[in-house]
Every structure is written in C-alpha cells, then in structure tokens.
Length: 152
Image 1: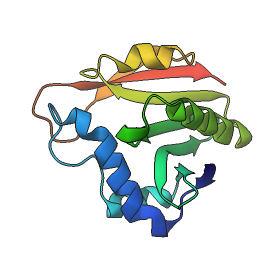
Image 2: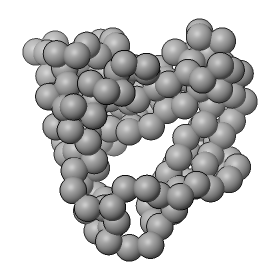
Image 3: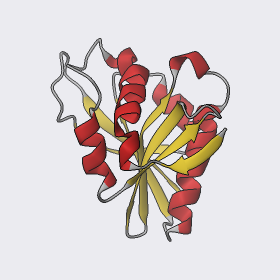
Image 4: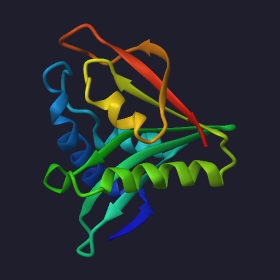
C-alpha cells in the first residue's frame, strides 16, 4: 500500500470512499459528505492524501490544507472494511508530515460535537479542544464543530 497525493482523476473514487466512511453521520447529516465536484474544488488549493492498494483501489484518504504556519486536516476516511488496521493513524501521520514539510508549526482539525467518540480518538494523537465553530451543512439535529489543535 502506498501513500500519494490524489489527482483530479481520483475525484469519483475519492468522493465514494469519503461518503461511505461518513455513513456513520447519517443520524444527523443530510446527504453525502462530499461529491466529485467538491473534491475537485478542494484540490485547487489543498490536497487529498490517499492510501492506495496494489490494485489501484483506495483504502483511505485525508484532506490537508496549509494556511501559512497552520496546517489543517479533515475528512479522515478509511474504507469501513479496513477500519481497525491502523490506516487512520497512518493517514494522520502523513497529514502532519505533509504540513510540517510545508512549514506549519501548528495543526488543527474540526469534529462534530455529536460524534462523541472522536475527541478521545484525536486526544491520543496530542490534539486538544481549542474552540468551536458553527456547523454549516444541512443537519437533522442541532450541532457545532469542535476545534482541536496541537503543536507540530
């Protein structure tokens, strides 16, 4: 399995993988997590790092963006059939390394407050709650984004 930066021709497979991994949010989120057009738009000023199987299929992905010295990652996605195998850890490490190499000194993520399993998961990697932001996508339940950050 290799880690690489996704290309525009990966947009369809990438959107399908992300939406599949985010089915766990169907209890509060309206619609798919993303679509190929959104993926291509995001690629214009940021990147998706993907874990690619030998057969070319995608096992996981993470969105990364550099804003000066602040790195951001989101849409951490692992194919549900591959979860629990350390691929999420591998993607988080790749995202942090990507941002560190671009000169970032801090890293930030956002998690929806209704996903109560996520803050403890990210705390294991050194992230701590540092603020909140509104949740702007259509939602079935009231929610907000928890900002978590760490020094690189």
